Image 1 (spheres, rainbow, N blue to C red):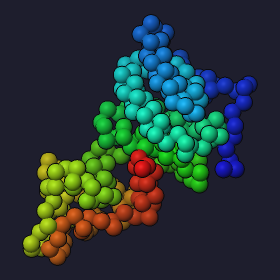
Image 2 (image 1 turned 90 degrees about the horizontal axis):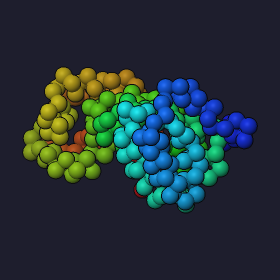
Image 3 (image 1 turned 90 degrees about the vertical axis):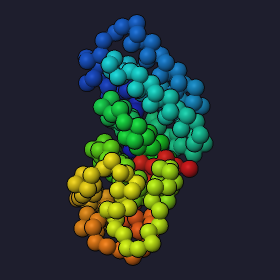
Image 4 (image 1 turned 135 degrees about the horizontal axis):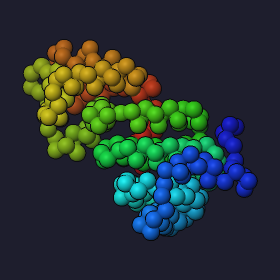
Length: 247
């Protein structure tokens, strides 16, 4: 990628995270957490050393355990796909920027659905050689802005059959007419119609879904999860691919 800029020895990663260092204290427990996270990444061949150096002491004390759990899962993800990673890309300012912005987002999240999306974003950032830095940063912003309710609905629309199976097959083929709202309520009975309408409208408005809000209540022919497929907008298709863990 032509716009990638390589870090040099005179501009270490400490300059990137300097803005947050003042908020971090130095305590024995904080130092222990730093060492744990560095150790987790250092154990991953090829990419571990570089990512470990990115961490520095960027560990907010109150959220340290969440970051450790996130890093444990991310290290396992990277270990599985290390032979596919662009090793030149991980040494660029671009990846350092995305990496640290993702970890700042993790600080503010506790829901597993959102943390899984952020992990997938980082993994795909390392694998994707075509998507521009601006697009990746935009994907990260959209991913971070998703509510858990929106993330659940997006998972249902992007993989209706797989999500239905994961939920225990609550959506059964209808013998008579049905609606998208009815199918969604079967998958997520705790979601009210008002909340579903608001969340779907939000996903429509961001160009992720393609006009689904107005199609929620009209009746359709008998059927089941197949009615939920094909609802992503072009941008939504690319976004979902980028925030879904690769095979």
